[in-house]
Length: 165
Image (cartoon, rainbow, N blue to C red; front, top):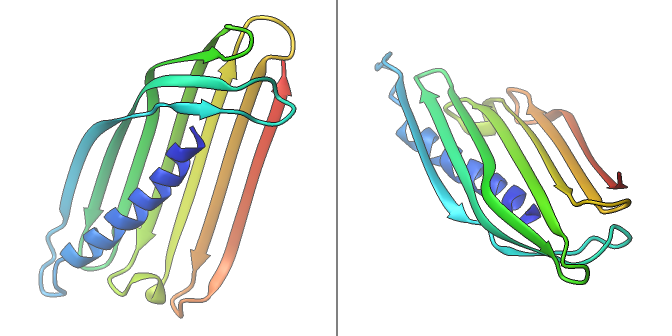
């Protein structure tokens, strides 16, 4: 599941770069906008030390991407959520309920981050099973801002991980 977060970051960087290449020239005031969605398999084993047992998850993640670009800036939004993900504890055989959501918003300017940009990402994942001490929660928040000289003026990151009920 954390693979999804890393895949999302990579996807956001790739789409942002593509949108900057497609940005209209200064003489063209019309905005270009697009929305797309797709899904990818989200299968794997997760084990978090002191949070229980290895858990195998199968299913897919749905992704929606929306972007708008014009001569002044590019806005990119990405939303992901798990759908149909079933998880089973490898030691206990417990059936886990998995919920995952990830959002990213990026603002760029035609010259990229050398002219200023910012990005915010937030993700939340719950893995819950019956009984005491079987739940896992992960919450990730990240933000970075570059000024118009390409210098980082703000950055923030936090990962919260909790185990139990």
